[in-house]
Length: 47
Image 1 (cartoon, rainbow, N blue to C red):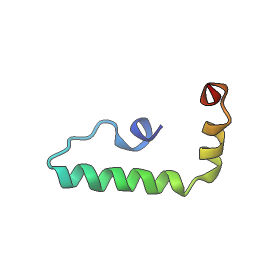
Image 2: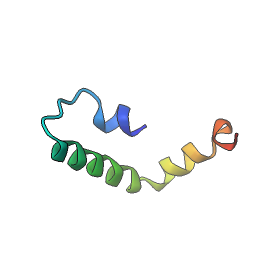
Image 3: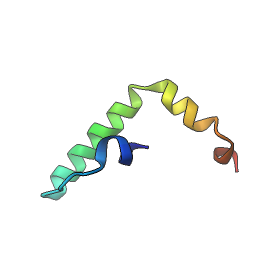
Image 4: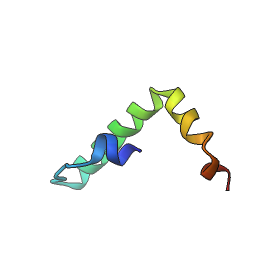
């Protein structure tokens, strides 16, 4: 989810850039608790 929404089509110029963008994507996801719940309620998430 994070890859396709906030990390795709990027050119990573350094390790620090990767870490910064991953932190940004994580924080965007955490700000959307209903999205997290929606992903967790899917059938494939329960094995």
